[in-house]
Amino acid sequence: MPVIESNYKPPFWAKKSFVSTVFSGLARQVKGLEQTRERMELPDGDFLDLDWSHSDQSTDKVVILLHGLEGHAQRPYITGTAKLFNENGIDAVGVNFRGCSGEPNRLFKSYHSGATEDLDTVVNHLIVKYDYNEIYIKGISLGANMALKYVGEDRDLPEQIKAVIAISTPADLKGSCDELLSFKNKHYAIRFLDHLKSKLKPKLIQFPESITVKEFNSIKSLIDFDHIYTAKAHGFKDAYDYYDKASCRQFLSNVKIPSLIINSLNDSFLSAGCYPVKEAKQNDNLYLEMPKYGGHVGFIDKDNVYYNERRALEFVLG
Image (cartoon, rainbow, N blue to C red; front, side):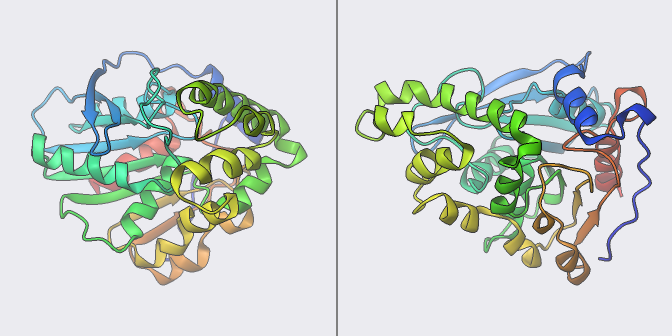
């Protein structure tokens, strides 16, 4: 489809990327949502924790919510969507990626931008155990890349999957990493790296044969982390091989269900390669919206319901 013209207009104080990004990540609160946790065992002996919230009415519809790098299913960008969808007759399940639910995962590997095998397991779990007939997937940042890669890969998608919404999508992982490592994003990169290293540190004791103290101490940047841990733990040659194989942009031409991408033009995390204009114009199932404002997952709007959340609901309801 052609690129969609966006009508998002933020409050005057939220036009700057830094303000909208930081406020949304650190200050926003979503109240009035009750979540219950389900532990789902994985075929390789690990587990995922799923945080459920339900509509007051009986429904056969559910939205799967995928968080970003070092996020979790209690982040406002997850709970805000869950609450809105619940209020409109759709159940929600927030997926905590491996090691992101407050408890270390069991294996040396954890999660990454292209780990669609875990998403596939969640989808099948919802179909087999709960018999949902309509499944929507909404991903944020890393989770957005994962969602689009999942529906664009060479697999037979279950007919129950009806739509995907991808927000602030790093469709070109190498380009996005380069942006994060630039001076303008130094404060974000330091924060991400601190979180990642603090979660990796216990694995030095748990898996001494897989990573050494010397290797751990050599991690000085996000790309170092991906060279030394992400690639090694998940079967890639190095960080660049990981970025190349896990980036969703290469899979977009094969997307066969309605999929909406909302990437703001002032998102400091995204490179030019993260705006798949050509792919959207050539695929009738792909909708690309590029608001002027919004930062990274910072689409602040009225009544504490974010623009991307309203658009996601509009998209799935048709």
